[in-house]
Length: 219
Length: 219
Image (tube, rainbow over the protein chains, first blue to last red):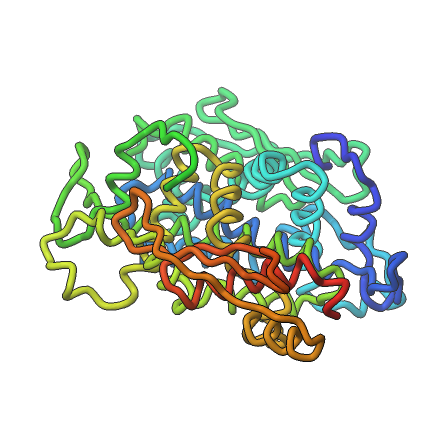
């Protein structure tokens, strides 16, 4: 899931230890993910800031701040943690069902903190690019210009009198969570693929990729 | 002042360009330090967070957040910018005297953003260690346990019946800003030295160093 080999597994264990497990380290300090969450929260903010800075040269400080807060919103972080299914790894005395929504985002942040401590800034940045920026962050959508890439693609095909279809199949591989793969055909040619934990997300991803692949023609 | 060779001078020029200079880059985007300030603000926060995480293994998330906000307070940032005398480099249509206090902190943040873009995370971290953490961040003081190292040292000397004196001399070297050097003698032996832009700060720095040098005896 990480895309690299972790060096110090203890740090990752900590990142999945809930305070209810009541664990302590050798020095007697509480051993749970809350301190790592503190670290991961600020790492994420910095990495996203740099990405936005580079991506939008015309955006002023206010614009960049607003866009960043959309990406690192509580709701978005929870979605990220859920997609990675982080809660399956949690060590806790509380049953998994009785956690609120925020545990997903908290675990995601703690995992980022652990990656930073284990492998440093560059690895953390790469992980955020692969898991957050590449699949979820796009300026057009953040700016509200494009709400759904799928609708955008459909409208474009209708206008251009092109046939399109989405072919969806379940494709969970070795993963415990259900996954869906999607192929988007335009005029019987595969234009883009997507894969995600829901049919809707996979279609959206394929549409987004089609949007970028066909950008010159579409805009 | 940086302690390393900058590669891309243009980035640093931008870090000192005020919006009143009304400059634009080749693409026509406003060219001033505000976007770099956005970047530097988050870099500083991350670097300080990591330092606190490592320094205080017993501090929980709430403690770490509180300590961080003390270090990155507006007042503290302004002090840092002033100590480095950053405003002398500003490119602006406004006279230097008519800026408010915050320009100092803003320039400091913009400079951090420039260092990150020019040389990357590690250089930025080293700069923050050398200019912020080493001279200014200490947990005892942040926690309010020690308000002034100088008073602490004086009280200790009086209690232990030791003679002490501070020897201060002006020592501006090649710098345009006035600097003071201080030697702290205890029982006629130089225990620690300090150097800063005011007599008071230099004495405090020497006292802090004496505190750490004599820690076993003092506590």
